[in-house]
Image (cartoon, rainbow, N blue to C red; front, side, top):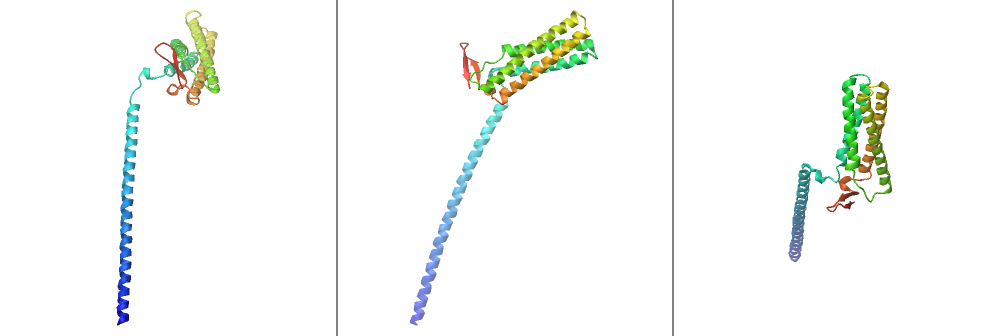
Length: 229
């Protein structure tokens, strides 16, 4: 009887200890689950806030991109003008070549107007809206020099082609040998404007000159030039 009572008390104590420990463990587990849930919820809120911020930035960027920039927004108008002599002089070479064989009278006038437009565009791009630069690296300065050399070749060959074409149409009455000279000079002009465009593209996309006004001098209100790097 004595041993039975001791055994019963021991069993009750053991069961109570195990159940109490399990209850505390379950409580800790529940508390940990709650803490993890709170942390996960906070992380989700932070992620949602960051995502909303990114969406707002993208929306603002999209709205900015949808706006057409004014001429005053450009650091220089050179890229807008320089495409005209490139297109016009290359086309003039093709119409001059075709005019040696077909539609001579009509294509002569087309070529004359194309050469005049290319000459005017080359002069405006090279003399009137050519930006000043500063702070260039040695490589960028060399590329700019090559760009300016070929731009000068383009201007002078376009002028020569216009004069020869005018002479052929109004003075010597379309002599074949003179038309061939016009073709050769226009070929040289087309080559020069292509090389000038190549070095200009290298300046912009490789050396970073002109992108967002980098390395360009901007005139201030007093007519002086401000540096933009």
